[in-house]
Length: 254
Image 1 (cartoon, helix red, strand yellow):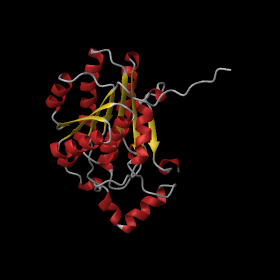
Image 2 (cartoon, rainbow, N blue to C red):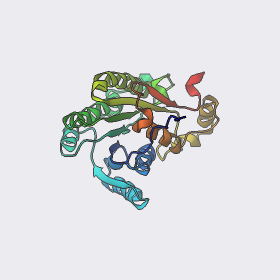
Image 3 (spheres, rainbow, N blue to C red):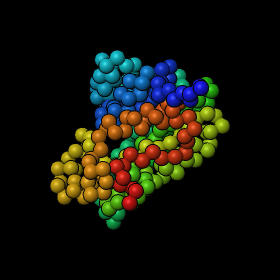
Image 4 (tube, helix red, strand yellow):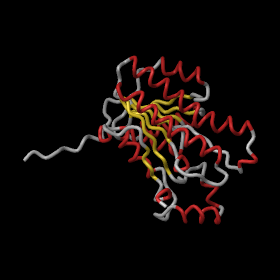
């Protein structure tokens, strides 16, 4: 009897672009893709930080290059993609948050959060796709969403708006790009402890409220997202597009 064979999670011979890759979630995603054999380009605004991240991946035996690039500079993003060979994988990770009650939101806050979390994510993906289409490259777009793209939360009106929009954007991308063999999905994490979020968890009441909703009983780590990214980047998810992979410890199950 011939048994079915599990599709490969390896990414040898594929090129990956990770935005917001200098630290935290972006660095973890870049490390995961490199460990699976991808040639990874790490992008962030801070040149020194992203170069150190790429060097750490190279020191671990991976293939990585660092590029200092502000993804809110759409002309620079388009030029960067024109000047590089097509990527097969995009981890669209750069993002920000300005928690506050909706009645306190100023236009500048709106522009900052929606500008990076949605507008830049859209046009980074578009620039990557243009190059993929030009080279007839198939692949996977992975957008870093959030559980807050599936539910609401206090003081999260801007963040929720951006992440709900990202979900719709990804679904529409999936439909536009399916004929070209390009998939589009989101990863939707719960609260993940990173250098950016760690100070929030020093507030005992806030941490307790978060843990009450994460049914598995712990704050997420960047390692919790690495397998999800590898799955969506690889042939193991070759029939998966237009959906969201919730890594939320049960937050949205209730």
